[in-house]
Length: 224
Image (cartoon, rainbow, N blue to C red; front, side):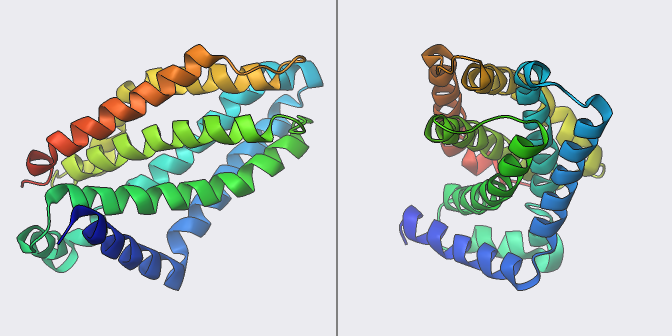
């Protein structure tokens, strides 16, 4: 079985499980919206302050949402030794990771589609004329967040204190990605919007490096 076909099958399984209950997606969206709304009432920002601080607050909400969503990524597979069965199946370990990554990317993207318009309304930020470029920044940043989060979720899956271990592993690695994403988003929210290609290239490079590393190390990542 090819990697693409195996990943597609696993993606279908993840989508079927999630959309049957929608527990994880609903909890993630509600949690992220609460973060955005609370920051809005706490700071009551002006238009200038929204352009200055808004990008950081937005990506903090995405980080919290991603952490909540990625944490149980391999938790389901621990039940009934499903992960062991997948590892014995005739498919590559990277296919398992890729299927999880695609599912997490889709779920987090759906959450962002809901969060961004609410953020724009609460923080009085106009998305007119920048929505396409903003979508590109969000897509590249989300890929990096999902790839690293899924990988470290697999690493922490067998640990006793995995709830604590995952943030400790993930946050230092994601710091450069978040800085680049915030800077790229801030350039789009400026009075004269313009996408900084340096930060965009950094986001793309980050995604390529960690996606390649997860492919090369997939055999070791899923070992007990």
